[in-house]
Length: 255
Image 1 (cartoon, helix red, strand yellow):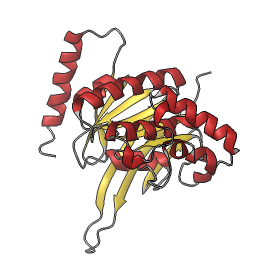
Image 2 (spheres, rainbow, N blue to C red):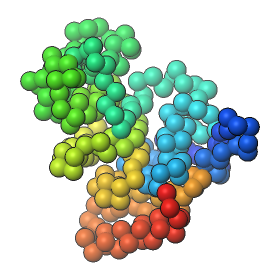
Image 3 (cartoon, rainbow, N blue to C red):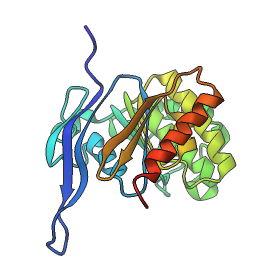
Image 4 (spheres, helix red, strand yellow):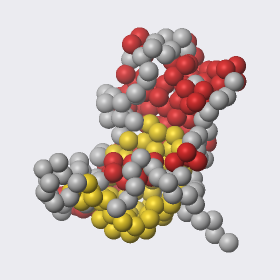
């Protein structure tokens, strides 16, 4: 028997009321997709196409206006507390606590889950070492570069061994060289841990580098294009795929 999807959207719509009392803003319209366990999915689209709203629906931060969101056979909004420790999040900005050292930031989720201090600090130290930061465990965020802070953020997300990792453009604030290096490390970590990953981006190259499946959204959030990237896909095929993605994005007008 086939396993149920790790993440399932069934005809999901989400609208937000406007402060001026005008017609509600529709961010997501009848969005349907299924993501299997262990999939690495890149969601690509222009600014305002509903990527972040979809992210928040998966994370259980908001509930759909219509339709159904199911994550690991649970409603992520109604059963929000059940997901503690099961979903890790990496944001565009590192969101480190400035009064905590690097190792204390990495251990935060484990601390919230009541793990004893010696055990959580051991796990945090191991993840810092894995991301090349073993010599900076006791540094505060202000003493770290942007790339180093984001490594701490990634270590924090992985430390709790989440089943699902949600990533909202975590490398967009970094310079090109640092971002490329960290993306490749991140992809290797995802493969090693087997976590299901949803990666939101507006960069075609980032989507191709990180995703094993790529979904292009149009506004309001609906799937305009869905493709699987084979491991043996050559550069010629990738260039054809780039062209197809550009064509889909250009047909949507300005972002």
